Image (cartoon, rainbow, N blue to C red; front, top):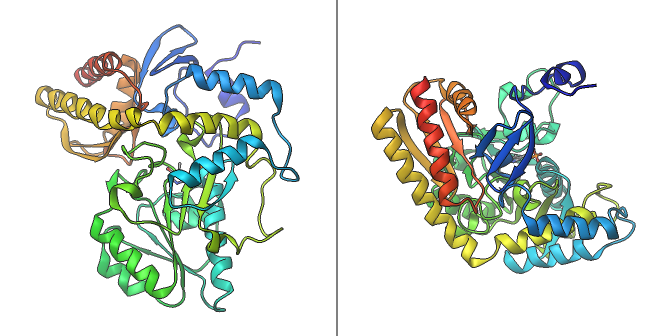
Length: 395
Ligand SMILES: *Cc1c(COP(=O)(O)O)cnc(C)c1O
């Protein structure tokens, strides 16, 4: 029986609308589909394949661990999980780690920890402040934190106790925080919400207010973490530490894994039996993530991200000189938002690029998002922009 794009419509829940080709193989920043056509990948599986496709060291680690031990359950601990937890703690503010299988689950754990921690202080301390255009995942709790109507409609009743205020608006935030607030959750750079970095003043104001009202500050670094912005985690650009940090996407560079990082004092609230997940922290996922973390933490790789950002910005400016299509370029490191002049044209451009052999992402209807592998080379970038040019010409 042949497998093709029609098979998707026959057998899969229609919650996704995948491209009309099926990728078969990948190497570094390139993919090949069923027909042998190749694509330059400027999307990296939505900021997941941070070391490109089939990185030889990750393949080797996967094979080694695959022969040794895949899964145990949390009735036992395992060496790869402990190694990865040590790496995360020594590289960040964190002292304790909880492993999950996805970003949404890492945020679910973060919000549950915040509620639990606050419940030990006061009965009515349960409110969570989040921001407009946020994205925190698709579980009912995290999709409510995201607060976007298009993702919650029809799923009511939703968890209660949320406030949403405009991003980077200190005055609006200060109006809703109170002794009832248990947590403030935000992305240091809004990913799905238009590639908007928080201002340093905004993060400073959140930190101060959280200290004053004894609320936990949660940085959702599911997309911005693991080198994406040029620092290991985006909070390091700002010098402002959260109480809880969540990471996933590029943590496993394609192997599903997430983590919630926190301090020893906060972690005590998740005492034995209060939270868990069967596959979270399994040896196979943690072995791959540990190797990926080692490679991404390397100073040469992190320094190279700013260099690559400059190549991308210059190439975008050259394209704009020819096609006059860019309103603004935003973002940090290799999380780049290109706001288009023509409204609602991002999907059309993404499709045209696919035809030309280039994979892009969008972030809202007007913004092209670029999140290439962090180790993409100059030849791959050059070839990608040749195809970008072709796509723009075809419109
Ligand atoms: C992708 C993403 C999530 C959700 O992660 P999943 O692994 O899809 O559950 C949460 N927060 C942010 C900022 C993300 O970009």
